[in-house]
Length: 123
Image 1 (tube, helix red, strand yellow):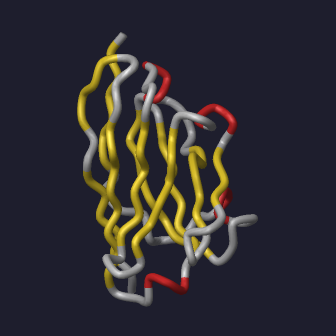
Image 2 (spheres, helix red, strand yellow; image 1 turned 60 degrees about the vertical axis):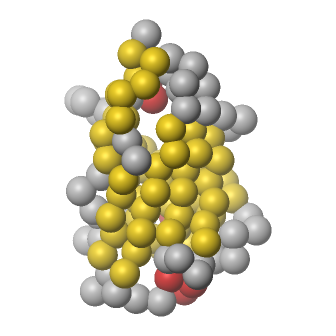
Image 3 (tube, one colour; image 1 turned 90 degrees about the vertical axis):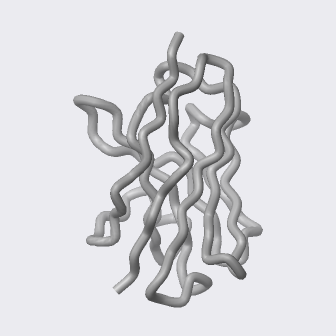
């Protein structure tokens, strides 16, 4: 069984930055594509960004392109989400998860969701 632990959230003013971390344990990290997702109050969870096993390919939802950057370090079993230019609409609980391919990670739904980390952006 894999365990995912997110951290790094907080309260930031519009235009600010945060760096989220997700550490995985329990299975071979390099076997999986990793993704970040978020869920705002009253809304469904949505895909934010994904990264390939070797970290060379990434994909983003349109609303974060140019502002967010996903990266990973397979030696640390960790994936990060660098968020710049944060806006109030980025306020959400952010989660990481794992999958088998970049094409399917946006719609992944399994039992590996962690507790998430809250990001709040004030205007």
